[in-house]
Length: 256
Image (cartoon, rainbow, N blue to C red; front, side, top):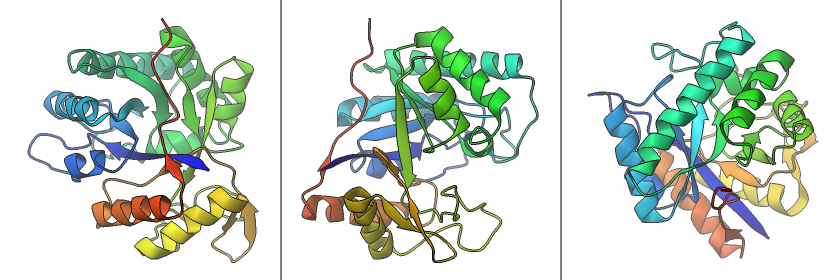
């Protein structure tokens, strides 16, 4: 058994410090690094990419809406062509920071409200896919199993990677419980570790209403901005190691 362990990083901005990126980069195998639109200033992004490179952690571009004030967690009804351009811009910006840090962007993952929107929003899903294809069609796309994003990416010939959220509640439809609702966030490191191991072994997760839902994923996300994130990631990594699960990145070197 094997799984990739990813986290959202590089989200500090100026004097506003969010999370402990250095500690998380010692635990995860893939880093979803902000690209400056929802979070992350240039110095933060360069520093995060450099630490990822020295730690052997794969860097992915976490693209989002142009919404610093809302941390990218507010839906924006942006025209698909503009959204595609915004995403190309973000991938390119982070790839530049990777280049001067001895690494490269090796996959793309939407952030926040955009991630949730492209579960069902066909036009915005197609825009994300169009941007990735235009920038580098060898880049995998990380998203929710069964989402419009992964369907569009697969149809376009892109590699798709299914993701599980270690510390988020699931609905009976196998989507994420909105952050505004009870059960959206999980805080017990032992509980989330056992939940992840069950998903890896059986593909089953208990939803917020107590029902059992099927979730088949190759990568597991531990949020880096939540309280106790490092302790939770430490427990999850120890639990995976103890269960004999190989923790390894899903993405390798870029084509070309």
